[in-house]
Amino acid sequence: MIIYLETRAKNYTLTQDILRQFPQSEVIEMQHYKNLFDKTIGDYPLAPCLILAEQSPIPILETPPKYGFPGRSFFFKPSINCIFDCSYCYLKGTFKNSFPVIFVNYEVMQEQIDQKIGLLRTEGYEGQITFYASNYSDVLAIDHWTHFNQSFFPFFEKQEHVLLETRTKSANISSLLQYAKEHPVPKNIEIAFSLSPQSITTLYEKGTASLSQKLKAIQTLLTLGYRVGLRFLPLLPVENYQERYAELMQQIKAQIDITKISSIFIAPLIYNTSDYLALQKKSDLPFLSFLHQQEQGLMKMQQKYYDIFEALFTNAFPDHQILRDYQ
Ligand code: SF4
Image (cartoon, rainbow, N blue to C red; front, side, top):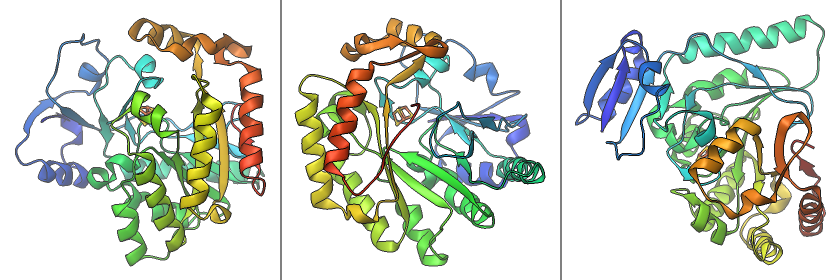
C-alpha cells in the first residue's frame, strides 16, 4: 500500500491515526492531492493506494431538484472515490482516476455545515435540511479507517430538524455497533442500504457485500433502534428483471422487519451527458442502451421501466410510500 500524503494534511489527528493503521505502507509526501488525483493515469496496474488530503475550499453543494427527501438538501464530500467497483458507477466518468481520497479536516467541514444550517434558519427556512455524505464514496465501507461516524454523528445529533444520510453497499457495521454501546442510538442519522438482486450484485457490483450480508446488517441495526432506509438504485432493467426484483423483495420481507424501515427510495440509472459518454468509452454495459436523453441533458432510464418498477415495489411493500428520486 502506498499512502500519498499532502503536506498540509500531515498534522491532523486523523492523518496520524490512519498512518498508524498502515504501518507497512510506503508514505509519499506531495504538495497537493490534485497533482495525482486530477491526472489521467492510464490502465496499467497500480499498487493499492490511499490519498490523505485537506479539503479546501469545502464544497457544500445543494442537491438537484427532486433529489431525495423533501426540503433543502446538500452533498458534502468527506472522501472521494470508492473501494468498490460497480460497473455502472458514475464516479468512473466524474473523476480522472479511481484513487481513494480521504479528507482529514472534519472539524472545518462541520463548521461549514453548521454555517449552512445557520444561514438557512436565519433566512427563515424551518423545514428539514438533509445532508448526504456518500455520493462520492461509500463512507460506511471505510469507516474503520476514517472514523467518520464517530466524528459526525455527535455533530448531527446536536442539530434540530436536520438529517444525515449515509448510503452504503457494504455490511461494515462494526463502528455502528460500537457507537451504540457508547452513546444513545442517533435519531438524526439514516443509514441507507443500497440493495440489488444478488445476481446483479455478482455481475455489476464488484467488491460490495452480498445481499444476505446486507440484510443481516440491516436487521441487526433495526434491532438496536437505528434509523435504516432501503435504496433500490440504480434500478436495472436487465433480462428477467421483474423476476429478479420480485425474488429480492421476497428475501427482504423474509429476513428483515420491513415495518421498521424508515424510508424506501427507488431511482433510475442516471448520468449527466459527459459522465455517460466517458463511461460508454470505458465499458460495454448492456443496460446503457436503455437510457434516453431527457431534460437538463440527463441520460435516464425510460419512463416505462420506471413505472413497472414502481408498481413492483408498491405491491411488495404496500405499507410504505415508495419515494422516487429524480422524479
Ligand atoms: S458502491 Fe456506490 S460509489 Fe462505490 S463503486 Fe458502487 S456505485 Fe460507486
